[in-house]
Length: 143
Image (cartoon, rainbow, N blue to C red; front, side, top):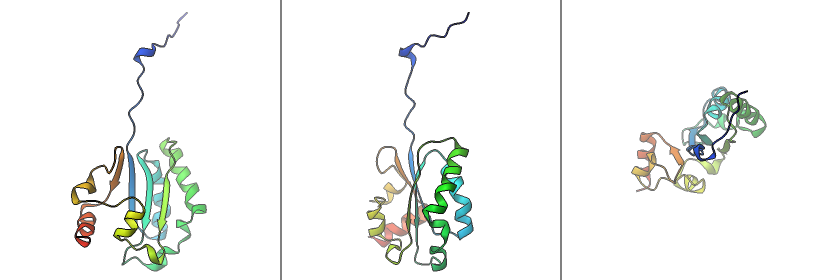
């Protein structure tokens, strides 16, 4: 018969996957409900941060779709669809004290130190995804 022998010296560990943090302004309530499974199906997304901007609609901050009892099952559905096992961490920062600011991003460990750092890894295998206009705006605001 046929016999399979594993040659240990030919086995290599897979490369580490990047860890992407996605920062979203509070979207329409039904849109975020639809986005939870999609976002969590991507294997590299390990953290989602929902923030309140100065112009965010205050009614959107109170949506039940930002509660763990709602988004947890949606995230699990997306993880199953994406065939992934790494849990997605969620930070929802929509209280009155949590408007996007230097202090909030620093508290979350997401502060851009300079314009060049916005699109580069903040640490090895840890990436922050921020649109260039937002990063430039934040950089200008904090000079």
